[in-house]
Image (cartoon, rainbow, N blue to C red):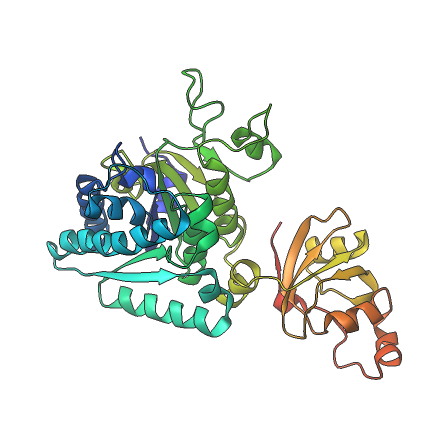
Length: 379
């Protein structure tokens, strides 16, 4: 079944990020499922033959390491997990490359950490490499560098949802497809027969967030919370997202044919520039400024710059040119931007009119603390 909206989304998607999770790529015993990788490569090849470009964000390094080493269970201990991931990564990329070479293509391994996308120069290097790989017809296979990404490997098993959303912004892909172990976002507990997949989400509001929270414990269920956050990042930047089952052997083909599969999250507004995507979603804030309601309205509703008079307080230590979070008085982030003043200077001029900045600092290089051209709404 197709509908006009999905057909429009599919037609516009010339560049696609496909994220596939560990649970999709591994068998019940935790080893790498090569048949699933073969099927995924077949589907991606069909999309590329149809004139589309595909970047694959793939988990599964630890599972591939378990397979290569013949282990009976997932290793315990961080250092051992890192070692198994290092061995497994070669097994994983080898499996992808084997199947892509059957279609005359090559898999290109890209291993990243958060710092690679935080630093502006490294971010641009990643972007340029990915775009060139796509130009020559290769399939970039992106993964978090588990051997050094200590926090992620210790807490989750190859959760690359956030990385996939960032990749969508890095290469300005029109569509992010997250292949999960569930059919999509459910309107209730996925384990209950009375629950149904939500076909379309127009906006990720409180009612949608509530669907992935256990009412008694408040904990996320089935990893959907991280997928929802990834969808928020991509749709805020103006791109569409589909969450579907990676165990469906035609999920990608169906999604790009405009069929009603999984849950479609609709892009919010116009696409934003690559520079603003880096500011809003890749660069790590070095501090935050808290603003009053007047500044909140000016920024979020009127598209204005942040002036000193609207700042209530500043936290953290940051310099001119750093990315900072702009938060309301309930500590909710509204936006991010490049500051024209250091944290010490902001502490001196906060609450003051722009014409008073020179008197307070001895100079006034900028009227705005954060200019609207360097500011991105993130809420």
